[in-house]
Length: 198
Image 1 (cartoon, helix red, strand yellow):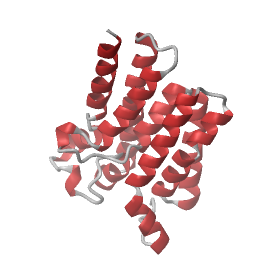
Image 2: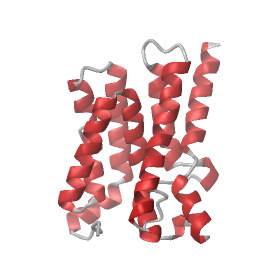
Image 3: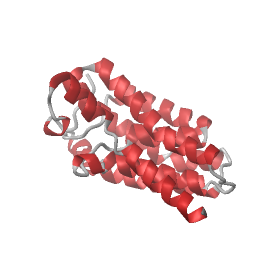
């Protein structure tokens, strides 16, 4: 029974993560495939290029909610004394967001959904990371820089807030994964060619 629960958590989280809100909203409103626009990402930053600032924030919130949902379900609807199910849900929802089965494994960069998972694990750490992201992005005008720094410090914050080792390990894994997904952005930042928020 325990293995069936773990299987359900992993598959459920991945499928929830694979629901690409940015793709669905842009498709519904314009008929366009967001993967053929700008960076090709289904995330909020690319949605902004098509639909503007309002939809940037809507997709941002929806993706954060998407990230939090399976983690909260795993925390409160399964027997999870060590947080294993919550951590597995966190990992697989961000994989689903970035590699969605419904879109030939081409999705977003898992920043908003990643912050959502951290909010569900520890809301204080999640809000701190969101504040860091907003501050860095506002000052630098680079969404990617804000994302890299905010997720990069997440394992340190999870440790400082005295969370279980599994949560800290997840934040480290998520930070490495999300920074890897931003590797092209990092190259453009170094070259001074990254697009700024306007």
